[in-house]
Length: 376
Image 1 (tube, rainbow, N blue to C red):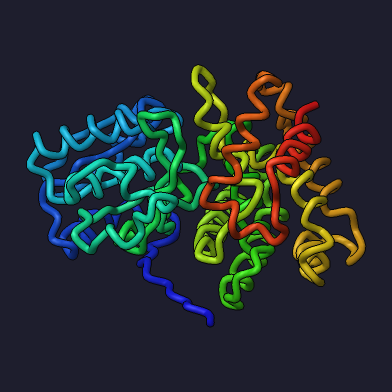
Image 2: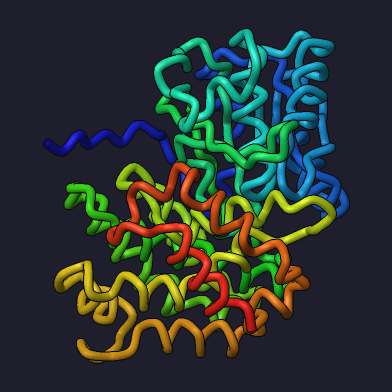
Protein backbone atom coordinates (compact mmCIF):
# COMPACT_ATOMS: atom_id res chain seq x y z
CA UNK A 1 0.00 0.00 0.00
CA UNK A 2 1.20 3.51 -0.81
CA UNK A 3 -0.12 6.36 1.35
CA UNK A 4 0.69 9.59 -0.47
CA UNK A 5 -0.06 13.04 0.94
CA UNK A 6 1.24 16.54 0.09
CA UNK A 7 -0.15 19.13 2.49
CA UNK A 8 2.08 22.19 2.43
CA UNK A 9 1.16 25.48 0.77
CA UNK A 10 4.33 26.83 -0.86
CA UNK A 11 4.75 30.45 -1.95
CA UNK A 12 7.92 30.32 -4.05
CA UNK A 13 9.71 33.04 -6.00
CA UNK A 14 11.73 36.19 -5.71
CA UNK A 15 9.67 38.68 -3.71
CA UNK A 16 7.63 36.07 -1.83
CA UNK A 17 8.58 37.69 1.48
CA UNK A 18 6.38 40.64 0.56
CA UNK A 19 3.32 38.40 0.90
CA UNK A 20 4.03 37.37 4.51
CA UNK A 21 1.38 39.69 5.98
CA UNK A 22 -1.26 38.22 3.65
CA UNK A 23 -0.44 34.68 4.74
CA UNK A 24 -0.52 35.56 8.43
CA UNK A 25 -3.85 37.29 7.99
CA UNK A 26 -5.24 34.25 6.19
CA UNK A 27 -4.10 32.03 9.07
CA UNK A 28 -5.54 34.39 11.64
CA UNK A 29 -2.15 34.94 13.27
CA UNK A 30 -1.98 38.34 14.95
CA UNK A 31 0.85 37.91 17.47
CA UNK A 32 3.58 35.78 15.89
CA UNK A 33 6.81 34.80 17.59
CA UNK A 34 9.70 35.10 15.10
CA UNK A 35 12.05 32.17 15.77
CA UNK A 36 15.50 32.65 14.30
CA UNK A 37 19.22 32.73 15.19
CA UNK A 38 21.96 35.28 15.76
CA UNK A 39 23.45 34.79 12.27
CA UNK A 40 20.15 35.60 10.55
CA UNK A 41 19.79 38.66 12.79
CA UNK A 42 23.33 39.83 11.98
CA UNK A 43 22.66 39.43 8.26
CA UNK A 44 19.71 41.79 8.55
CA UNK A 45 17.21 39.18 7.38
CA UNK A 46 15.27 38.99 10.63
CA UNK A 47 14.63 42.73 10.44
CA UNK A 48 13.39 42.37 6.86
CA UNK A 49 10.99 39.67 7.93
CA UNK A 50 9.72 41.72 10.85
CA UNK A 51 9.17 44.68 8.53
CA UNK A 52 6.99 42.41 6.36
CA UNK A 53 4.70 41.36 9.24
CA UNK A 54 2.24 44.12 8.44
CA UNK A 55 -0.40 44.60 11.11
CA UNK A 56 0.77 41.57 13.09
CA UNK A 57 2.50 42.38 16.37
CA UNK A 58 5.64 40.26 16.45
CA UNK A 59 8.22 39.35 19.07
CA UNK A 60 11.61 37.75 18.44
CA UNK A 61 13.35 34.67 19.83
CA UNK A 62 16.83 34.47 18.30
CA UNK A 63 18.59 31.92 20.50
CA UNK A 64 18.44 28.92 18.16
CA UNK A 65 21.64 26.84 18.54
CA UNK A 66 23.34 25.22 15.53
CA UNK A 67 21.83 21.89 16.56
CA UNK A 68 18.52 22.73 18.27
CA UNK A 69 18.19 21.43 21.81
CA UNK A 70 15.41 20.60 24.22
CA UNK A 71 16.68 23.40 26.44
CA UNK A 72 16.28 25.89 23.58
CA UNK A 73 12.75 24.57 22.99
CA UNK A 74 11.89 25.38 26.60
CA UNK A 75 13.28 28.90 26.23
CA UNK A 76 11.41 29.40 22.98
CA UNK A 77 8.18 28.14 24.53
CA UNK A 78 8.63 30.57 27.44
CA UNK A 79 9.06 33.43 24.95
CA UNK A 80 5.91 32.29 23.12
CA UNK A 81 3.90 32.33 26.33
CA UNK A 82 5.35 35.68 27.46
CA UNK A 83 4.27 37.27 24.16
CA UNK A 84 0.85 35.55 24.27
CA UNK A 85 1.71 34.42 20.75
CA UNK A 86 -0.78 32.73 18.47
CA UNK A 87 1.64 31.41 15.88
CA UNK A 88 5.29 31.23 14.80
CA UNK A 89 7.29 32.64 11.91
CA UNK A 90 10.44 30.52 11.53
CA UNK A 91 13.31 32.29 9.77
CA UNK A 92 16.64 30.64 8.99
CA UNK A 93 18.07 27.26 8.11
CA UNK A 94 16.93 23.87 9.30
CA UNK A 95 17.90 24.55 12.91
CA UNK A 96 15.57 27.53 13.30
CA UNK A 97 12.74 25.81 11.46
CA UNK A 98 13.10 22.59 13.46
CA UNK A 99 13.22 24.55 16.71
CA UNK A 100 10.11 26.49 15.68
CA UNK A 101 8.20 23.26 15.02
CA UNK A 102 9.25 21.86 18.39
CA UNK A 103 8.16 25.06 20.14
CA UNK A 104 4.83 24.92 18.29
CA UNK A 105 4.43 21.39 19.65
CA UNK A 106 5.60 22.17 23.19
CA UNK A 107 3.20 25.09 23.71
CA UNK A 108 0.19 22.98 22.72
CA UNK A 109 1.06 19.52 24.08
CA UNK A 110 1.88 18.54 27.66
CA UNK A 111 4.52 16.14 28.92
CA UNK A 112 8.15 15.44 28.10
CA UNK A 113 9.25 16.41 24.59
CA UNK A 114 11.00 13.05 24.06
CA UNK A 115 7.64 11.35 24.42
CA UNK A 116 6.67 12.79 21.04
CA UNK A 117 9.72 11.39 19.23
CA UNK A 118 9.15 8.84 16.48
CA UNK A 119 11.33 6.22 18.18
CA UNK A 120 9.29 6.62 21.37
CA UNK A 121 5.98 6.06 19.58
CA UNK A 122 5.21 9.76 19.57
CA UNK A 123 3.68 9.98 16.09
CA UNK A 124 0.17 9.18 17.33
CA UNK A 125 0.48 11.62 20.26
CA UNK A 126 0.96 14.72 18.10
CA UNK A 127 -2.39 16.29 17.29
CA UNK A 128 -3.73 19.07 15.07
CA UNK A 129 -3.50 21.42 18.08
CA UNK A 130 0.12 22.27 17.10
CA UNK A 131 0.51 26.06 16.81
CA UNK A 132 0.59 27.33 13.20
CA UNK A 133 4.04 27.88 11.69
CA UNK A 134 5.06 29.93 8.67
CA UNK A 135 8.55 28.83 7.59
CA UNK A 136 10.92 31.15 5.71
CA UNK A 137 14.17 29.41 4.69
CA UNK A 138 17.37 31.43 4.35
CA UNK A 139 19.46 28.47 3.15
CA UNK A 140 18.87 25.98 0.35
CA UNK A 141 19.39 22.61 1.96
CA UNK A 142 17.28 21.14 4.73
CA UNK A 143 13.85 21.66 3.20
CA UNK A 144 12.45 21.78 6.73
CA UNK A 145 9.99 24.41 5.50
CA UNK A 146 7.96 21.63 3.87
CA UNK A 147 9.01 18.72 6.10
CA UNK A 148 6.94 16.92 8.69
CA UNK A 149 9.78 16.51 11.16
CA UNK A 150 11.97 18.35 13.64
CA UNK A 151 15.24 16.88 14.89
CA UNK A 152 16.09 17.95 18.45
CA UNK A 153 18.97 17.11 20.80
CA UNK A 154 17.22 16.00 23.99
CA UNK A 155 18.41 16.67 27.52
CA UNK A 156 19.71 13.08 27.70
CA UNK A 157 21.97 13.65 24.66
CA UNK A 158 19.90 11.74 22.12
CA UNK A 159 19.16 13.48 18.80
CA UNK A 160 15.57 12.47 18.11
CA UNK A 161 13.07 13.14 15.35
CA UNK A 162 9.64 14.54 16.14
CA UNK A 163 7.59 13.38 13.15
CA UNK A 164 3.98 14.19 12.27
CA UNK A 165 1.97 15.71 9.42
CA UNK A 166 0.77 18.20 12.03
CA UNK A 167 4.31 19.60 12.26
CA UNK A 168 4.38 20.61 8.60
CA UNK A 169 4.39 24.42 8.42
CA UNK A 170 1.10 25.87 7.23
CA UNK A 171 2.97 28.07 4.77
CA UNK A 172 6.42 27.63 3.27
CA UNK A 173 7.42 31.09 2.09
CA UNK A 174 10.43 30.48 -0.14
CA UNK A 175 12.14 33.63 -1.41
CA UNK A 176 15.48 32.94 -3.16
CA UNK A 177 16.38 36.59 -2.53
CA UNK A 178 17.09 35.65 1.09
CA UNK A 179 19.80 33.17 0.02
CA UNK A 180 21.82 35.54 -2.19
CA UNK A 181 24.27 36.48 0.57
CA UNK A 182 24.82 32.93 1.86
CA UNK A 183 28.62 32.38 2.08
CA UNK A 184 30.24 29.84 -0.30
CA UNK A 185 31.05 27.28 2.42
CA UNK A 186 27.50 27.28 3.73
CA UNK A 187 26.12 27.23 0.18
CA UNK A 188 28.18 24.10 -0.47
CA UNK A 189 27.21 22.34 2.76
CA UNK A 190 23.50 23.10 2.51
CA UNK A 191 23.48 22.29 -1.20
CA UNK A 192 24.93 18.85 -0.52
CA UNK A 193 22.29 18.42 2.18
CA UNK A 194 19.64 18.87 -0.52
CA UNK A 195 21.46 16.42 -2.82
CA UNK A 196 21.67 13.84 -0.03
CA UNK A 197 17.94 14.23 0.62
CA UNK A 198 17.03 13.77 -3.04
CA UNK A 199 19.22 10.68 -3.41
CA UNK A 200 18.32 9.00 -0.10
CA UNK A 201 14.58 9.50 -0.50
CA UNK A 202 14.67 8.18 -4.06
CA UNK A 203 16.63 5.08 -3.01
CA UNK A 204 14.33 4.38 -0.04
CA UNK A 205 12.31 1.19 -0.69
CA UNK A 206 8.94 2.81 0.15
CA UNK A 207 6.48 2.96 -2.75
CA UNK A 208 5.78 6.55 -3.75
CA UNK A 209 6.29 7.26 -7.48
CA UNK A 210 5.32 10.96 -7.20
CA UNK A 211 7.99 11.42 -4.52
CA UNK A 212 10.49 9.56 -6.71
CA UNK A 213 9.83 11.96 -9.59
CA UNK A 214 10.14 15.00 -7.33
CA UNK A 215 13.40 13.71 -5.82
CA UNK A 216 14.97 13.09 -9.23
CA UNK A 217 13.96 16.53 -10.48
CA UNK A 218 15.46 18.09 -7.35
CA UNK A 219 18.66 16.11 -7.80
CA UNK A 220 19.01 17.22 -11.42
CA UNK A 221 18.56 20.87 -10.44
CA UNK A 222 21.01 20.70 -7.55
CA UNK A 223 23.71 18.93 -9.52
CA UNK A 224 23.35 21.40 -12.38
CA UNK A 225 23.53 24.52 -10.22
CA UNK A 226 25.43 23.86 -6.98
CA UNK A 227 28.88 24.73 -8.32
CA UNK A 228 27.60 27.96 -9.86
CA UNK A 229 25.88 28.90 -6.58
CA UNK A 230 29.08 28.26 -4.62
CA UNK A 231 31.21 30.18 -7.10
CA UNK A 232 28.79 33.06 -7.74
CA UNK A 233 26.32 33.52 -4.91
CA UNK A 234 24.63 36.45 -6.67
CA UNK A 235 23.53 34.25 -9.58
CA UNK A 236 19.75 34.43 -9.24
CA UNK A 237 19.04 31.45 -11.48
CA UNK A 238 21.40 29.27 -9.45
CA UNK A 239 19.84 30.40 -6.17
CA UNK A 240 16.30 29.81 -7.47
CA UNK A 241 17.14 26.28 -8.58
CA UNK A 242 19.02 25.38 -5.41
CA UNK A 243 16.14 26.51 -3.22
CA UNK A 244 13.70 24.56 -5.37
CA UNK A 245 15.94 21.48 -5.10
CA UNK A 246 15.93 21.81 -1.32
CA UNK A 247 12.13 22.01 -1.28
CA UNK A 248 11.84 19.00 -3.57
CA UNK A 249 14.21 16.89 -1.50
CA UNK A 250 12.06 17.48 1.57
CA UNK A 251 8.78 16.94 -0.28
CA UNK A 252 10.04 13.39 -0.82
CA UNK A 253 10.88 12.89 2.89
CA UNK A 254 7.74 10.85 3.46
CA UNK A 255 9.48 7.97 1.69
CA UNK A 256 12.02 7.99 4.50
CA UNK A 257 15.76 8.56 4.41
CA UNK A 258 18.51 6.09 5.22
CA UNK A 259 21.96 5.32 6.58
CA UNK A 260 23.43 8.74 5.73
CA UNK A 261 21.02 10.40 8.13
CA UNK A 262 21.09 7.56 10.64
CA UNK A 263 24.79 8.36 11.03
CA UNK A 264 24.68 12.15 10.79
CA UNK A 265 21.96 12.57 13.42
CA UNK A 266 23.87 11.08 16.38
CA UNK A 267 27.13 12.69 15.25
CA UNK A 268 25.39 16.07 15.25
CA UNK A 269 24.62 15.56 18.94
CA UNK A 270 28.25 14.99 20.01
CA UNK A 271 28.88 17.22 23.06
CA UNK A 272 31.31 20.05 22.57
CA UNK A 273 31.33 19.83 18.77
CA UNK A 274 29.71 21.98 16.09
CA UNK A 275 29.23 19.59 13.20
CA UNK A 276 27.16 20.90 10.31
CA UNK A 277 24.44 18.45 9.32
CA UNK A 278 24.76 19.04 5.57
CA UNK A 279 28.53 18.59 5.68
CA UNK A 280 28.14 15.31 7.55
CA UNK A 281 25.65 14.11 4.94
CA UNK A 282 28.07 15.01 2.16
CA UNK A 283 30.90 13.10 3.84
CA UNK A 284 28.79 9.97 4.43
CA UNK A 285 27.02 9.88 1.07
CA UNK A 286 29.77 8.21 -1.03
CA UNK A 287 30.29 5.32 1.42
CA UNK A 288 26.56 4.75 1.88
CA UNK A 289 25.97 4.79 -1.89
CA UNK A 290 28.57 2.04 -2.30
CA UNK A 291 27.00 0.09 0.58
CA UNK A 292 23.51 0.26 -0.94
CA UNK A 293 24.38 -0.07 -4.64
CA UNK A 294 23.55 -3.76 -5.06
CA UNK A 295 20.24 -3.44 -3.19
CA UNK A 296 18.39 -0.76 -5.20
CA UNK A 297 17.67 -2.48 -8.51
CA UNK A 298 18.04 -0.09 -11.45
CA UNK A 299 17.67 3.01 -9.27
CA UNK A 300 21.37 3.82 -9.28
CA UNK A 301 21.24 4.11 -13.06
CA UNK A 302 18.37 6.59 -12.71
CA UNK A 303 20.36 8.56 -10.15
CA UNK A 304 23.28 8.65 -12.58
CA UNK A 305 20.98 9.88 -15.36
CA UNK A 306 19.60 12.69 -13.17
CA UNK A 307 23.18 13.70 -12.42
CA UNK A 308 24.00 13.84 -16.13
CA UNK A 309 26.29 10.81 -15.91
CA UNK A 310 26.63 7.65 -17.98
CA UNK A 311 24.32 4.83 -16.79
CA UNK A 312 27.24 2.81 -15.45
CA UNK A 313 29.06 5.75 -13.86
CA UNK A 314 30.58 5.54 -10.40
CA UNK A 315 27.98 7.70 -8.66
CA UNK A 316 29.72 7.46 -5.29
CA UNK A 317 33.01 8.55 -6.79
CA UNK A 318 31.34 11.46 -8.58
CA UNK A 319 29.78 12.65 -5.30
CA UNK A 320 33.18 12.41 -3.61
CA UNK A 321 34.74 14.48 -6.40
CA UNK A 322 31.95 17.07 -6.20
CA UNK A 323 32.55 17.43 -2.46
CA UNK A 324 36.19 18.16 -3.16
CA UNK A 325 35.46 20.68 -5.93
CA UNK A 326 33.13 22.75 -3.75
CA UNK A 327 35.55 22.76 -0.82
CA UNK A 328 33.95 20.35 1.65
CA UNK A 329 36.12 18.24 3.97
CA UNK A 330 37.31 14.88 2.73
CA UNK A 331 36.27 12.99 5.85
CA UNK A 332 35.33 13.02 9.51
CA UNK A 333 38.94 13.44 10.62
CA UNK A 334 39.11 16.78 8.81
CA UNK A 335 35.98 17.82 10.72
CA UNK A 336 37.68 17.08 14.03
CA UNK A 337 35.62 14.01 14.94
CA UNK A 338 37.55 11.90 17.49
CA UNK A 339 37.98 8.31 16.42
CA UNK A 340 37.06 7.07 19.90
CA UNK A 341 33.53 8.45 19.39
CA UNK A 342 32.80 6.17 16.42
CA UNK A 343 31.69 2.96 18.22
CA UNK A 344 28.95 4.81 20.10
CA UNK A 345 27.79 6.47 16.86
CA UNK A 346 27.55 3.08 15.14
CA UNK A 347 25.33 1.84 17.98
CA UNK A 348 23.20 4.98 17.95
CA UNK A 349 22.66 4.78 14.18
CA UNK A 350 20.69 1.55 14.58
CA UNK A 351 18.25 3.38 16.87
CA UNK A 352 17.75 6.41 14.61
CA UNK A 353 14.37 6.79 12.90
CA UNK A 354 16.06 6.86 9.46
CA UNK A 355 17.73 3.47 9.97
CA UNK A 356 14.61 1.46 9.10
CA UNK A 357 14.17 2.95 5.62
CA UNK A 358 17.67 2.33 4.32
CA UNK A 359 17.37 0.04 1.26
CA UNK A 360 19.91 -2.41 2.72
CA UNK A 361 19.60 -3.57 6.33
CA UNK A 362 22.57 -2.29 8.32
CA UNK A 363 24.05 -3.70 11.52
CA UNK A 364 26.23 -2.01 14.11
CA UNK A 365 29.23 -3.57 12.35
CA UNK A 366 28.05 -2.18 9.00
CA UNK A 367 27.73 1.30 10.46
CA UNK A 368 31.18 0.96 12.02
CA UNK A 369 32.61 0.17 8.57
CA UNK A 370 30.78 3.12 7.01
CA UNK A 371 32.19 5.41 9.69
CA UNK A 372 35.69 4.10 9.12
CA UNK A 373 35.34 4.48 5.35
CA UNK A 374 34.20 8.08 5.84
CA UNK A 375 36.86 8.97 8.41
CA UNK A 376 40.11 9.68 6.59
